[in-house]
Length: 203
Image (cartoon, rainbow, N blue to C red; front, side):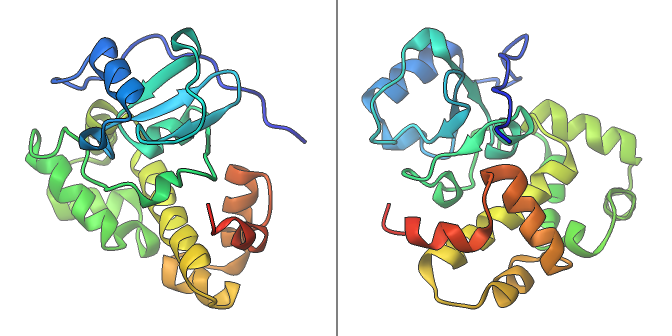
């Protein structure tokens, strides 16, 4: 079953230093300085890309910008198989603007939500789980769970593309708690099993 195309969100996420026109000019130039700073959701295809993607440029009226890959995925977009958003530098431009978010993200990158809960993560940071979720949505445009899911899929996609490891080992190294969850995450995001993406590694 094809996933419905996402609708444009009501407004720009709270990226303090960027606006729509700045991002649009950067993506039209395919400016590598913005790689990892924002992602482009194409409303007509349901795909999201990096600013440096080499595919034909979509019309400006058909795009929406997101501060993170997780925000684009939370809005319903699928990763481009050509520009491989999972290989973009994970250094969004908000970095350092909120120390709690930076600390939380580092813990998530280290696997805090692969083995624990959002409540456990919030306890480690000395704040409530609801406040942590609000901070993530404000600065990253996505929930802690979505950020963790995106990071796991990104790690797995790199292993699929760059190694010949068996899928069970890919799932384990990427931080999935089970092969079933690993397969379900890829079916949900890509609409296909993870093994089928190995043939796209040449993109």
